Image (cartoon, rainbow, N blue to C red; front, side, top):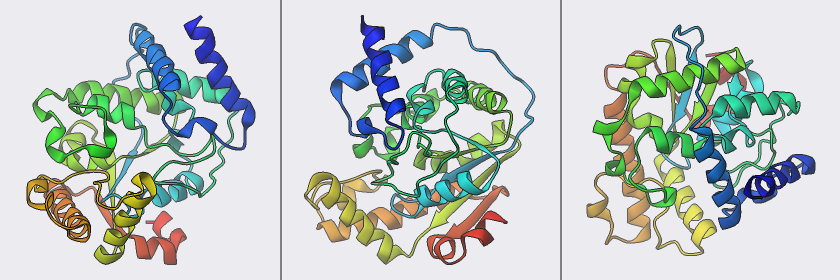
Length: 285
């Protein structure tokens, strides 16, 4: 009965075509999707050892343009990407990819988003649960995550590599991913994926901070409530004004990313302003 209910939810979304109704968190929906993923962990995954394809990882401070960049590259490049259907299979992405192909989900990108969430079933998805699992996040409240909440010493980088290669081989092409967490582990990912490339997007700090304030208002209706990734220095910011907090959030997270990419020669840095002015020039880099 539980799996029948889950199937009904998934295929209702698929039939609606134009948009995904269940983008907002729904307790029933999330519960049954989690049940499915728990079951899928019992199914043995095929393993691929050769690194045949390039993987591109997009990251940046929240509200710096990562979603737009993800959409542009997914639309313009012949790459695999996690769409809103595949994302429901975070414990078995190869099954999600196979299902997406079997249902002929089109490579359609809406170029619309709300706080990183995209409306079409074919739109790129951040794949948050997949990265949360692999990066050993201590809790699942993704809107209240700190840099210190990742249990670095417990991360199995070989297991992550296997899952990325699995995604590559089921797409049979290069792939692109977007998640703020990948920016915290550039050296580690680069060490296990020799053909990985990292795209770090930055935005004017003032505009980035203003956008973070607007995100607080949109998500909570209250700019005093923290939204998205907290830097290590959160303790220095928690009693400040909302305006000071978002400025500090941008400053300290940029500092964190700069440290993560230090001495890595596979990082491409671009700006949100460059992306808006000439997206095709960015695609051609």
